[in-house]
Length: 64
Image 1 (tube, rainbow, N blue to C red):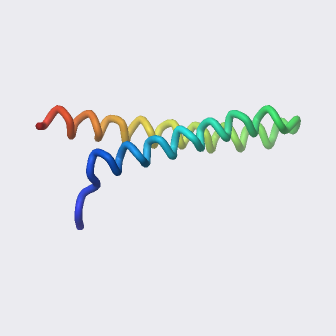
Image 2 (cartoon, rainbow, N blue to C red):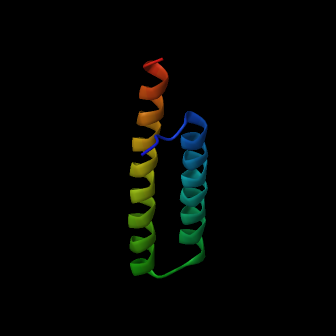
């Protein structure tokens, strides 16, 4: 399997950041606390995934 390039990984990070922003906006649109918790859990998973991806990008850049 071929590895992702730095540019591809940056594009994925940008997409995750957009999803995180959308989740933040969604919380503002809903009054239900249960829905807030679900959105926040989803957002937290996206943040963790983006952090992992950014670490991989950083490692890729440091290994050059």
